[in-house]
Length: 322
Image (cartoon, rainbow, N blue to C red; front, top):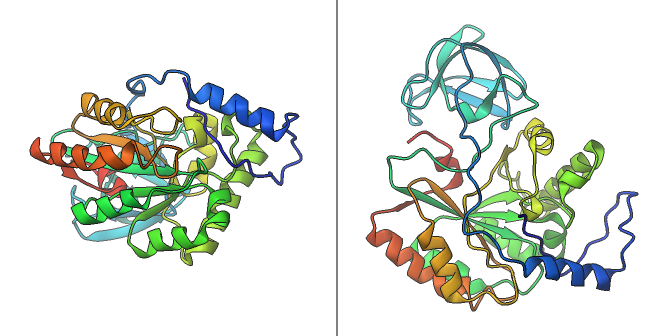
């Protein structure tokens, strides 16, 4: 089941009309949001290295090819989005050996596709490092809970902020603050429409419109990561996003903290009961009950995960092999 949430409903520049008045649409949206959310999203197939042969660079505008199979190794070459590379052998420590032009090296498999129409995407990290990553999707439309930001800063926990384009246009000041504070700033799309219901040209319009709005607000290029509104995505939409040089990001541990009846205990239990090594946890910053639910549960979650030996990492770090 997909989640659906919206408070403010932005007008789309597209010619497609909703056919539903705003008040009725809002009522329908919240009716769906009140339905039970599963404890965890089913795990899709993990990104695997393409077989020996050739592959296309996807989901990044510049793929660094490392001299050895570690993320801290020297960069021997950089392949642009859409470039063809040769895969020269089996993966080593999670990295794929490749040849690009006259250079050889290693890259993470998430950025290679034998078929760009079915690109890999990040839903979890490789196990073995006791890692967890937090992301916050922003665009429900209620007052953001700045107490959550204070908790992250006090506890020195990194997090990724995925902003909706329409929300950024309403609160550019907070978007700028999040960027200035060093958070990863990704895209959560522009409008409150499930991209899987739109034709290709309108999906592309939404993705590009969001990027323009975010970059205008934060004054720098957006980080190349994307989460879909309402968790609605499929291979077609992922391929469009990937072709723009952005890595589609998903999660297996949703806090499901966007509804009007969510509680602190519900958020805490949902996250902790579904935690595992390599998990990506999805929260919201501006849901109706963010302050009362996630705002109160987050300090407990952080404390208890630390006690269990978890390391808090960024989304780019989670995209790297363990």
